Length: 182
Image 1 (cartoon, one colour):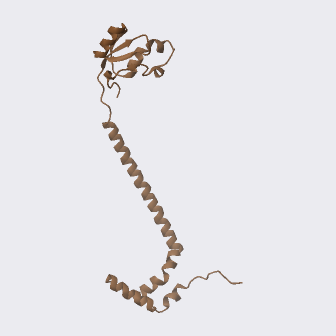
Image 2 (tube, one colour; image 1 turned 30 degrees about the vertical axis):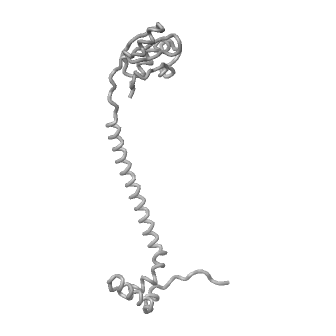
Image 3 (cartoon, rainbow, N blue to C red; image 1 turned 180 degrees about the horizontal axis):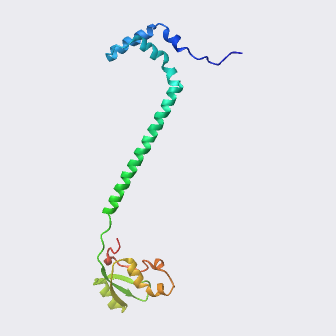
C-alpha cells in the first residue's frame, strides 16, 4: 500500500538550491522584454513557489477578503446608482405632472335608445341630431370623465343601483369632446 499523504515542503531547503538554466534564461528574457534587470534568486523563487503561494492558506484568505470587499463595493455602488435613479425618477415625475385641463362645456343628449351621447357644446352633428329625433339634452361644464359620469348616472348611484366605477365611461363620448382627463 502506497502512502499518498504529501509531506510539507521544506521551502528553505528548496530556496537554497542553485538557480537552473531555465531560471537564468527567464531572467535574461525578462530583461530583454522589459528592460528591467531582475535578481536571479528572485526569479528562481517566483518560478519555483508561485503555485505553492497560490494554494497557500494565507493567499486564499487574502483572496476571500478581496472578493468580500469587491462584493461590498459592488453592492454599495449599486445602492448609490439606485439612489441616483430614484432621485432622477422623482425629478422626472415632478416635471411630468399633467397640467390641469380647462373645463369643457358639453351637451349630453338623452335619445331614449341606448347610452347617452356626449358632444362638445356647439357641435354641428349635435344640432342635426336633436332636430331630427327630438331627443332631450342638457349643457353642463365638466373637468373630468368622473364628473361627467357622476352627473349622468347620479340617480342610479345615489339610489344604490350601481356605482360610479360600474358606470364610468358608460356613455357615447363623441370625438368632438376631445381630451377631458389627463
